[in-house]
Image (tube, rainbow over the protein chains, first blue to last red):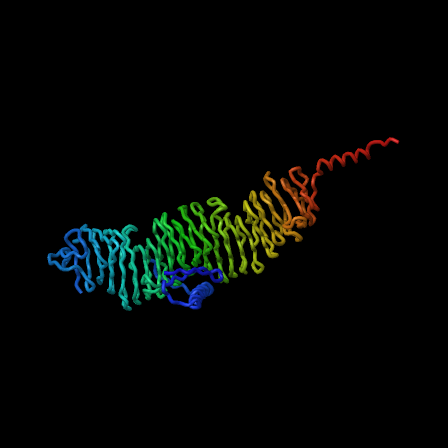
Length: 56
Length: 528
């Protein structure tokens, strides 16, 4: 697999793609942005806590 | 489907003599194939079963087995649904044990390897399927891989909520999901570097890193829930320059543990809790450039930070904290805690009076409220130049400068209202062209310390409304002392380094001699 490290607005992540992924640069950039957007939304709008019972 | 049972001593999986139609039975059968279930049980005794080629069967059950499953470099593929694997704490494995789960249906599956040891753990790769995957508890895994091995995709269902121990690598697939739970993933390897690739999937559960000698390295960003705690108990947590997002971070024991940042950071998202606990700094070190962010967006409640106490840590282990958002209350504890940079840029709430030992830069934001109190802030850097920025906020608490070799440059006026500014060690450079206000200015200790301006040759004004300020072992330069107080630098341990006004220095010997000569010329009778 190919690993592509990236940082957007201080958020650092990496894409892991198949060696023959066939994606264009634009598609890869869109994947990076999607990762960031998901994280940014999670931090700014954290989902409500839903817990399962703790198992020992 | 037929169920086939191993008996009869050591042998290869493909053996034509070791498989039976019943447990411990006499009826011989062929080795199990893709339409069969295989059982190694108490009647398989202590046998060594050698996987002599890549095997595909429906399910594998090892309950009661006390022998060894010798994988060599071969794999066992399980193509069915339901409980497809049941391990046993009594069995051993050797070689590179790997089980591949191949069913691509939407039917649920369960893996039940049991709480085996690190040495006897088995790697699992779940390459397909959209049904729920239950990881029964307790359960230990070596590698846990949800990709097909070639692509970042593979398993596309939701994994269950049980606590899981992983001794190897963890690799999520981009299409999977994880049900929120308070049960942790525990990474427990005791050697080597194990990687964690969450592939952009949010795992809303606690993460624990607890392996003496193990290194746990992020291969991508790791995001868990706001209510979850990430705990470093033993080993090295290597962010590998990635972002780790968790509600709370805790590493509070005396074990050897390392937090390797690279250029990565930890983002704390819990809005009303003790979000950072590292009180016991014994055994804790970090590498890289530390960055711990607390973005909020809390509007109420209190976020508490408990970095390492001064008694259990050193300057080298002090971390950088950035409170980048929220309008709630921030507390850094009333006992002495080490921080490196402490930066509130973006925060608009209240910083309660705490007692930090600041080894780096200190930045107060314009929109925040700085709580008053008697807990003192100590600037304790011992090297380099650190900045203090108050953005016109009054620090209504005592502050101390105490770092041999440290220099602090104020980027704007330093106002501590009616409180005492104490210099014990180091160099304080007040902002040139501004007036800093203190309630009292004091020096302690017998090391020489330095009061300067941030711009050489341009005075910085220090003001105190009343009283007598008496200093010792202080070298003063470019300082205008004013405000109604008397600024007594008369002691011989002080040095007038030039461009000072308002300070009363003892006359230097040459000046004293000149004064004496002139006085004599007035007192002795003149001869005409």
